[in-house]
Length: 401
Image (cartoon, rainbow, N blue to C red; front, side, top):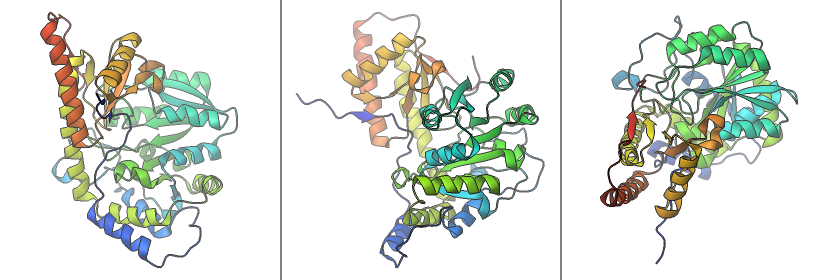
């Protein structure tokens, strides 16, 4: 008997068809009279101008306390409420957001420098540090609805004295989104500490509770950079496009690193993404709504695994707490080998992820539904042959304990 197809719920990619304006732009770019030369190492200026405008906010006093859900007028992309105006010279286009992080760290750090990274956090943070001869030091990343331990973060900064702090909100893998109060507290903490902040904001378009705000808006421009992703914001994972925003001197070093690594990003990709960002308002809102539907389908099925699950405030992951590393391993193997559903082991995200599993709801709705069906059917079969247990599945929402 042939084994059923493996349903892959491992990757942080929101799979959607390309929007029609982007499809047409890609066709025009591919069939037009493009010059057969390397692109500008910083990215096409007209694309950088679009990105600069996208991230320029109104001149006001910074983030407010209210955190409305994305609905109605909030569905206009990332909410930038800080007093900053971005110029095209501050934008560097890269071959994916990961290359932006590599290029920024290469320009900001010297071999042997320490970099503070969230734990649990994106596995590539540690890999990039090691590739560049840097030393990663972890600080605790909250779960969705949990509070940032600001004093613990301060202790890590004072003890290790890192050259760079990697900040990630919305969080991969936990689904945490920083509140306005947490942003202010972090900015105050960083005010007198000589550390450059790289704010990884690739899931900025995937916020379900509150709205995205950038820590960089509250910090001096020379000490803060942000990283963004066309893979996430436009569902163009295979096109390998990202970008960073930083002070012009930092941006110049970033562009030099990009030139060394890849000699620029795809011209066709930049022309396609440029149209996507100009025309993304309605499409982004629809995509958020469907992601929430996919999340609900998977979350309902995963309750039967008797794990604690916090509903994500942002990102495209469910972060399952299996309570022990051994049980997390058992569930991972059972899902993969018996149910043919592949998820990520929490240990890949750091020491604080060892008892967890990360499940992506960014897969297509048919794949999400099929994974949910297999999990539900399998746990129903078990429940019909096993007496009820007192420690049934726990579903944790928001900030509830």
